[in-house]
Length: 370
Image (cartoon, rainbow, N blue to C red):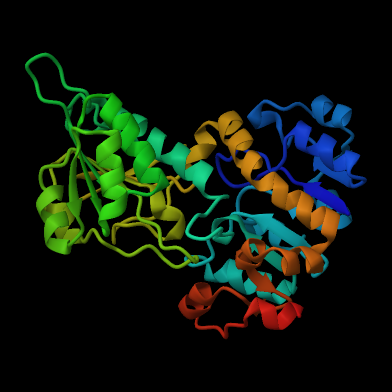
């Protein structure tokens, strides 16, 4: 199979879909890898490193898409890439289609196979989302601490406190991978941490790891109570299956928050946890709504592209090899987790949550491949 690694074109995105060591293994497996010049530079991987691994360098994206069958990238295709897609392609990347009806329509029109990292599932785990959730969760405290500074428009509270002065109050909504990562860093900084979750098992696990945190079972009333005292709110709620994030934080709740407090909306890729949230970029990461600084960067781990690329490809590469070595049809038949990742197949929407949101007909992937 010919595998293509294009350079990411989304704003402020420097991650890459495959490392030189990944390429070396694919070439050893007997495949051809074509990578766009400069694709790995933002993550610290030179063109020479890819050449030594056996890759072929492409001058531009059109050459990558023109020659490759399996397109491995990080973020969803941007408008400049739409015309490069066609029905021969297997697209493997983060898609987050629920808030992107235009892209969903384009992928259906192109009649390709689009496999989303975020819906590949092993039981209750999302193995290709987990490493990025961990990184986003951990970095959420560093960006929150930065924006609490008076010079950034925040309320001027030091997240760790000082001798005789209370630390910041951190409210973390959700106790999954991102929530756990956020709790670990907030706890280490000495913050006053409260974690809210819908069910108790994950809260009990966190309490064992971090004994001094407070935990609460979610209800709208509990959230409204806790949010008033928060200096920082970290939204990490994720709905499995590709659906939109529920808007748990209303505009009325924002009005009750402290002026200069910070909301880090990690789930903005799926629409965000606040009804006022909309995607921002690393270049312009924050906007203010009702006196609350909203940090809604849609590719948070892209701020640390070397770490993020290595963590991501550690998780995705076994699936890339499976697709390349077995071919699309056999790989999907042999691996139920990979089948769950298929969002679009030959013009049909095969993710029920996305189909409902886009008001399109849903087709079971099994009915299309068997």
